[in-house]
Figure 1: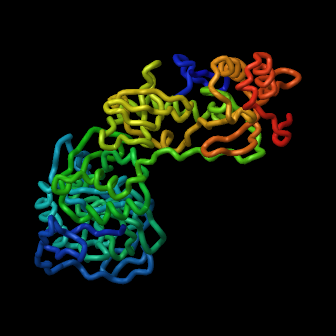
Figure 2 (figure 1 turned 180 degrees about the horizontal axis):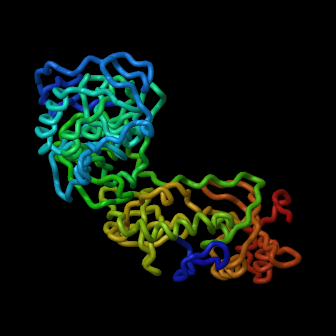
Length: 485
């Protein structure tokens, strides 16, 4: 039996209704791998390091002091006009986009665990090795003027001494800049003596690394420990990448990673089982606190649910976000369904989706409780979806279980229930917290919409007395402590 407040906290109508590192990826084939790089199913690569023929580097004090043999720096506005030597438009560092299919890849760098990592398609690794060989044999020219964020360059990687194509991300000061290695997906801060102009012939090839987010990770709680585990699990290794349509912001691509047919997402869940514990549980208000509330669901006087009146904004966010998230939310895996599992469930009465928690498993059906309203319902397992998104996983459950003070041991009585429902629904009430019993709080309720204010307990006690129900009367008590308006 359910009721729905009509004021600040809107409730669905049908049911009335109570719910709703820096890692350096392995250098190309001619560079020997570092300790933790380039292993593919324990098969290691062994290559010979080439003899570099790059120009020697000279110490410089700042960007404006040029190395011997270089022309002094002249500000752009005083410099004579020179013909443009930049490559034609359309041939400038084109990003690579992978189509929706499976690819053998090398995970070249992990930046934020499963949230942001870079891969290199295996089919392009030889092309990358050839390009890197050419780059490391070319004649180098130090920058002729201070770098600008977004400009392309060559950077000498600090760990293996190999030159890589890069983009300037930020100028730290007059002596160094942060660069992003476009073919590997990693970044580092370099002194200006390790940053060179990029010859135009190296701007044509597409970028070899592609940024990815692990598909389905938005439905898990990602901790620093999980990020480190993911990095140790995949970085520098070859795997199978299954590219899927966007599941969030289009600034990155999404895909599943497989290691010998093992889904990396499944390995993360197995390692961190609590990562599927999505929204946090609501902390109960302390004894003596007062809150304006609305009743969202009534079972009886000793078991009903309230929503704080100032949670209306959160409830509106949930309603709006649910309508969007459900479009891409994947079905729940049967193996995940167990009591306590948090998910989204389709209400069988109003055909709307709500946050829910499984309380009982009955074969192909489950009993769920709609955590933002309090009521429960039996639904098929096919009506469950995985929870995801910041809003759905950050806002705690909004419904709080309450017991009317004095009715703690109230027996089931339909007429008493009906009277209580009429007295508390569709209005804002003042709630005083008297005590806590288990996961519920014992409260007094006052209706201050009328004068003098109405004490719900006193009204309910008078109703029971008028009916002469001895069984109910015996259970009622009005302790001196805790009452008061």
